[in-house]
Image 1 (cartoon, rainbow, N blue to C red):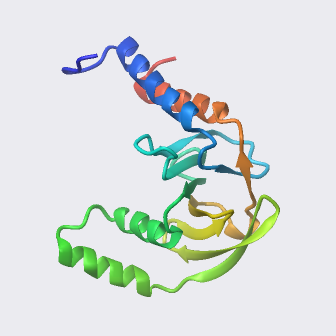
Image 2: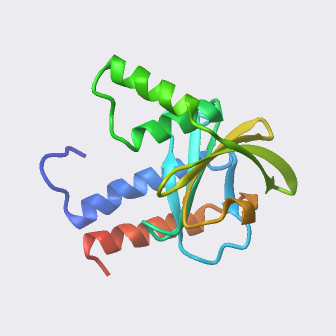
Amino acid sequence: MEQVGWLTPDEFWEQYGESEKLVRDSAGELPCYGVVGWTGPVALGEWDHGSRPPTTVSLFFGAAPSPGILVRTTSQDPQRTALFQRMMVQGPPTDAQDLAARQRAFESEPAEALLIPVDGDRVSFTVWHESDRWWAAGTHAGNGLVLEARGIDPGSLALEEVHDIEPYLTGSRSRIRAARGEN
């Protein structure tokens, strides 16, 4: 499909359907984790389409902006991933010196250790509290977990592997339809 200008709704949803197919095809290659007992809205978060298996997959629980939690699984170092994600909240660095200064500042910030149940195992996470959110990084079953949350107590959290991705695809479609003003 050649893309020039705006897509019609049919073209948009056709293209979005191709993205959903990529998610379905790679679901389970890197495990996704969800919040135990969550009954609120859900959606897909970031999903790596460029690697097989994906290097990062994530699920979102809640209604933006608050309360909510993004649960990211990564095959990369969760501490470095959390550092990068925390730095990007401030916007992209202006140059290499800005990047280095931010990295030093974030690496020197105090953090706390917290045990969060994941699939019934007590997993050690490093938690950073910021003014409007908290972040956590840990490792479970050989994969990194990076959490970003607002309005949720990290001490009350438990995670479990998600095997059915369809509710998250449906939730994402609903959010996009609402944002586009569609029924």
